[in-house]
Amino acid sequence: MPDDAAASFEEGKTLFDNRHYDDAISKFRLTLRQNPAFSDAHYFLGRSLLEKQLQDEAVGEFCEAIRKNPSDGNSRYWLALILLEKESRTDATALLYEAMRLEPGLLHHFMDQIAGLLQKHCTFAEAEEVLKKGITILAEVPPPRTSSPEVMFSRAHIHAVLGQLYYVKGLLNGAMLQYREAARICPKEPSFHTKLADIYFITNNGEDAVAEYRSALVQDPDNAEVHKKLGDALVKTRQFIDAFSEYREATRIEPKNEYYHKVYSQFRTLFIDSSQDGAREPVLQKTQTLPITQSIADDTFRALIRGGENEFVEFKSSALWSKSLTRDEITASDSKDVHKFGKDTSKVILAKTIAGFLNTEGGNLVIGIMENKDGTQNEIGGIENEYPKLKDPCADGYRRMLIDEIIRKFLPSGIFHHLNKYIRIHFMKMDDHTLCWLEIKKGDEGVFLKIQDEEYFFIRIDAETRQIADKALVDYCRKRFP
Image (cartoon, rainbow, N blue to C red; front, side, top):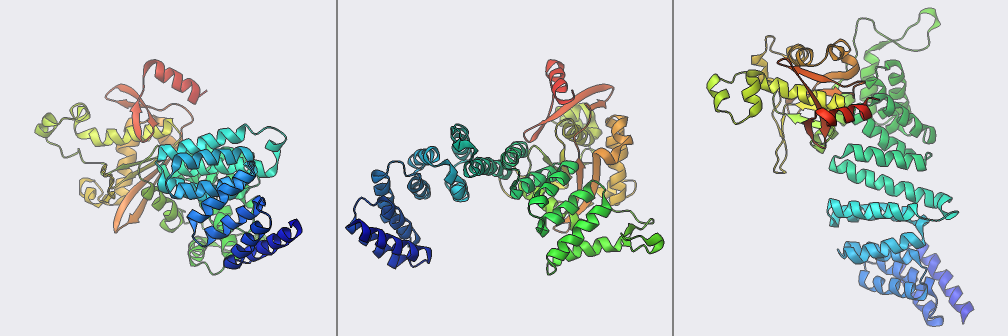
């Protein structure tokens, strides 16, 4: 009796929507007794069983829904999730690809769960393969379906998930490209702009970060976290008055957030209210400078440390380890650099890293961390033990050593004379140690190191600094510095 089955089905859906899953299961089973061909009843019965953690029974219902309605993409998505959880990757991905082709607009509803299961049960290469295949499938959706808002959002979302996969792996350039594409496809989705801005911020592209945070706020103006992040980016680009306004806005939106209050209060101490000439905005005290303080940069810095080395982050344990090498130690060393550069080796290595970042897309050099290649936690040793090797044994002396004995000595004069444009040096506290953090922007032209009257050109490839020369150098400079 079709009318009775339809009535039972609607009652079951109401129970399902109100999370009365046991009663919903009974209604959907009644529906199927009344009309065994009712494929949607199998689908919702599967959903109800899944809510009760009865996965095996749910699998049977989703399969039956697909058998009775071969164009059912929704059941395929749910079945793929179950099979991914059961680590049946081959069957799961086959179903997932079928679902994408049948119902591409539904994908974004499942992407967060798919991303979590891929990360949990698949290798990086396997997850990347699934997501890239999905991008290809959605790119082949024929018009006019391809221009529907649901399909567009699904396309953007899968790019964003692939971007996050790269981000977690430390492949920030790949992540940047994926989030750019997500933001291009769906420019009104603020989360895509925010994540892209986060990557720009980490890679020291401050102006681009500011632009993307502002794009996010156009769509989501009451997001206090993004206002705070925009404030940080404005500090990075030395736009202090605007940064003050963003911190104030974050505090206004979330007045109970103690961290936002702390940052805002610190900024207030660096400003005075001007009552002259009817000025309405705070102005910087002329007697003070405004560094990026630990509380403002702390989130970004700790994220860098947690993420480990990658194409935009390099750790070095020391800047002066070679300074005390004896002649015998230099002779006995297995390092070609030590034989060639002797006591200057550690400084030359830092100069290579700085030049590599300048010649690529910028990056971050952190001194005071020993990276453990075996996968165990990196060792934070700090730079304090190097102070006795300095003329002025303190953080300020360390800064002058970096500038005078590395940047000024080995890098072109244009970098030294415009130091604040390209390199900023901060001293950060972590685990009771002081770390030296160099934020390095991409250069406007090729940077050649001059060491012992020879010139060298370095770039970043993945997590390494590599020298290039001859035709490779010419081709690179033609593309990178047109």
